[in-house]
Image (cartoon, rainbow, N blue to C red):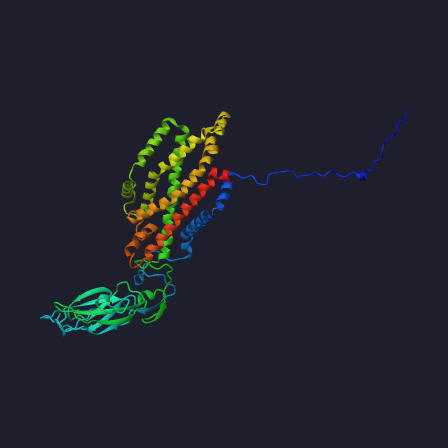
Length: 467
C-alpha cells in the first residue's frame, strides 16, 4: 500500500490579520428622549419659534431696557404734554408764560344799547413769541361789543362753519387779548376773533396766521445748561414713543409697566398651576374621600365671582397702596384659578395610575414618592406646560382689566393695563398714548397663545406617530 505525503510547506508571510467588516444594517435615526423629540418638532413650527423669540424680547425689553434707556418714568414735563414721537427737536427758551389780562378802559364792559351792525375786530396780531407753551393774541376793541369769541383751526377758515375749535367766549367789550394754552403743537394755526353784540354777532371776522414753535421755560432749560438765556434755541430730549398727558416719557413707562404686567402674567400662573398640580395629583392618586373633598372645594371656588372676590381682596390687602395691590391681584388669581388645573391633572393621574408600567412598579415595591416623581409627574408635564402657556395671556389680560377699572397699580407706578386706562382718556386727541400699551399687550398675549399651540402639537404623542 502506497502512502502519499500531501504535506505543504507554509510561509508565515502568507498570513494576514483578518479584517472585521462592520458594513451591516443599522438604525440611522439617533435615539431621542421624549423632550428631545418634542423640541425638534417645536423648532419646525415657525409661528411657535417666532412667538418664543418675541416673548424673550419682551422680557428683555422690560428687564434690561430701563438700564439702557435711563429715563425716569415718573419725571413730568408739563411743557411737553401728549407729544408724538420726537427726535432732537429744537425749542426756543422763554422766560415765563404770559398770564396778563389787557383791558381798554376807553370802552365799556357791556354796551348800553344793541348794535345790530357790529363790525369785526381790527388789527388782530400776535404778542411775543408763539410757542407750544402759550400763544397770546391781541386785537382792538369794537364799539358796541359785549363779548369776543375765539376760534383755532389748522386750515384757513372760509366761513363761519370752518373756523375750527371754539376756544373761549370772552365776556367784556373792553377785553383785548387772549392766551391759548390748550395742547399746542409746533405747527401752523389760524386764530379767528368774532365780536358779539347784545343780540347778534358780526358778519365779518378777522383771522391771523401763527407759526408755533416748540418752547421751554428758562427755569427748566437752566437745569441742563446754566449758560442759557431767554431767546436761545436748544435741542430737547428725545422721546421715541412720545409723552403722556403729564409729559412723562412713554417708552420708559412702557418698560417699567412691562415689569409689572409680565411679573403678574408669569408668576401668578406659576403659582396657581403649581397649587392645582399638587392638589389634583393628590386627588387623582389617593382617590376616595380625599378626592371628593378636593373636588368639592374646587367646585365651590369655581362658582365664586372673580370681580367680587377681587374687590374684597383689594380692600383687605391693598387699601390704595400700589405695591400691595399687586399682592392682592396675585392672591385673588391663585385663589380662584387653581381648580381648572387641578381637574386637568387629576384626570391625567387617574389615567396614568392604571397603566401597566405603574402597576409593575407597584409590584416591585417602589415607594409612593418615587412612583409619583418618576412616573406620574413626567407624564403630566406636557399637559401642565401647555396649560401654563395658555394661562399667561389670561393673567396679563386680567391684570390689564383690573388696572383699567382702577384696582391695579396706582400712579406714578405703571403697568400696561394702567397705561391703557390713562390713554383712553385722550384717545381722540393723542392716540399714541393708548396705541403703544395696547400693542404690547396684544403682541405678548398672541405670542403666548401661538407658543401654546406649538407646544401642544409638539408634545402630542399622536402627532409623533403620524410622522
